[in-house]
Image (cartoon, rainbow, N blue to C red; front, side, top):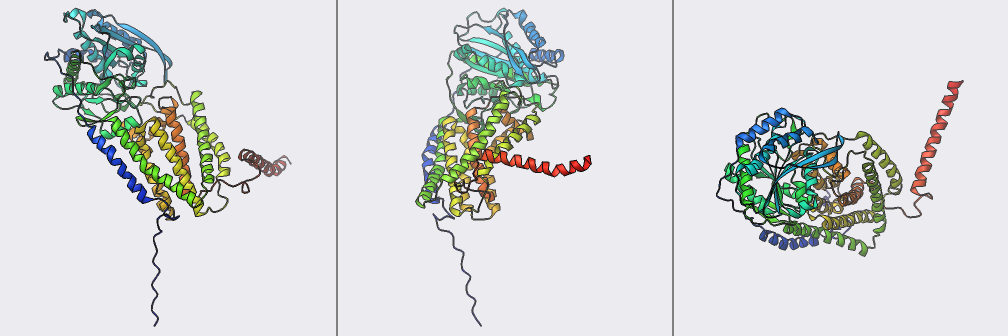
Length: 619
C-alpha cells in the first residue's frame, strides 16, 4: 500500500511580483501623513456668533400677509416668467405707501418661451450708508397649481416687510445705518434668472451686505436654510447663524439644513436651485428661508391650496428680527469662504481641503512606486500610455461633438443658468446624432486598440500602470480646480489601485472591483436623483448642466481624462486589453484610411450581392 503524496500547497505570490505589484506597506504607511490634517480639521471646528437682535419685538402682520398671498394666487394663478400682470400687481400693493418702485428690465432665454423680457422690481428704504441689505422673493411660478405657497407666500411677506419701513407709516425719523432693498425677482423657475441678473450688477457686488431670500415659506414643513452656491463658496457664517437664531426663537427649534455630506457634495459639485446661489457665488452673503425640501415645490405636483398662516407669521417675524440685528451697525465677514455645518458648529473649508488632498497622497505614492517597479523590471510602459492616448483621443472627440452641439443649440437654450427641474427633456435626436458620430470616432480609435495577440503579464501590468498614472494626473488637476471634488474621485483612485493585485483572479472579481470604483460619480447621480426628485432623469440633467454652460468646462475636460483611464481599466478587467501595436504589427495604412477602405469595400460587397437580384427582377 503506497502512501498518498501530499498535494502541493498553493503559495501566495510574494510582494513585488507580477501578481502582487502594488507596494501595500508603502500605501499603508503613507496614510499616517493624513493624521496631521485630521488634527488641523479638529482644531478648525468653531461655532459662529450670531448678531444680537434688538429688544423691540417685530411687527409683522401674518393675517395681512396671508390675505396678500391669497389675493395674488386667486387673481394670477398662472404667473410665468415675464408676466406683466404679476409685476403690475406688485406695484399696486406698494403704491399707497409712498414707495417708488424701480424697474430693471432684461432679456433671457427661457425654455419654451425663447427670448423673453423679464423685470426685477425694487423698492428701497435709504440708510446712512451706501451698504445695503436685500430681502428678496420671486413672484413667478411654474404654472402647476395656484402657486399659493410657491411663491405667493414669499411675495406677500416681502410686501408686508416693506410696509413696515414705508415712509407713510410713521416709521422712526432717524435713518437706519444700512439701506434696505426689497427685491421682487422674475424667472426663478428657470434658473433664478432675476436673482442672477441682480447679483451680476457691479454695484450689487460692491454695496450689498447680505441677502435673505424668501421662497415657499408658508408650507407645513419645518423651516429650512439653504446656503449652497453656483460655485464652491459658502455665505458668511455670521449671517447664517443670525437667521438661524431668529428662526429658532420664533418656532422653538432649530431650522433644518442640509446634512454635512450633502453640504460637502454641494461644494464638490456646486448646484443651487434657490435664489441665494448666484449671490453666494458672487461673494455676497445670502441665505434662503423655505419650508420646502432641497427641490423647490413647484416641480413636485400641485402645491397645497391652504397656507400655514402660523408658519408664515413665524418666518416673517424671524426675517424682520434678522434685519433689525444686522441694522445694529455690525458688519458681516465678506469675501470667499467655505465651511460645512455639523449641527451648530462648522468645519472650515480649508481644513477639509487639506484632508482631501492628503487622502490623495497614498494613491500617488503607490502609483509612482508601481511605475518605478516597472522601470526596474524593464517593463515598457510607453505602449500602454499610447493606448491610453488613443482612448483619450476618442473621448476628446466626443467632447468636441458635445460642445459643437451645445453651440448650435441642439441641447436647448444655453443661458448659463441651471435648467428647470420641472420638465427634463432628453433631446433624442441630438443624442442619436452624438452616438453616431461617436461611433465613427470609435471605429477610427479601435484600430489601435484591438487585441492582435494575447498580451503578456508584463504588458497587462504596464496597462494598469499607465491608467493609474493618468488617474494621478487627473487627481492633481482636480486639486488645482476644486479640491472638494476629490470626494467623487478618491473612491475610484483607492479602489482601482488594487486592480493589478486581483488581475490574476477570476473575471467576476476584477469586474466587482472595477464597478466599485464608480462609487464617486454614482454619488453625484444619487444626489440629483433623490434630493431633487429627478429619478432616472438625473444622468441627463447632470450632463445638461455642462451643455448650458452652468457646470465649469475644466471639470468636463477632467471627466474625459477620467473616462479614458476607466476605459483602459475596463478593457484589462474584461480581458480585451492590447498594448499599442509596434510598427511591425500595424497595417500599412493609418486608422482613418483603413476605416474608409473598409467602408468602401463593404459597400462594394453589398453591391455585388444585390446586382444578381436586380438583374433577375428586371429579367
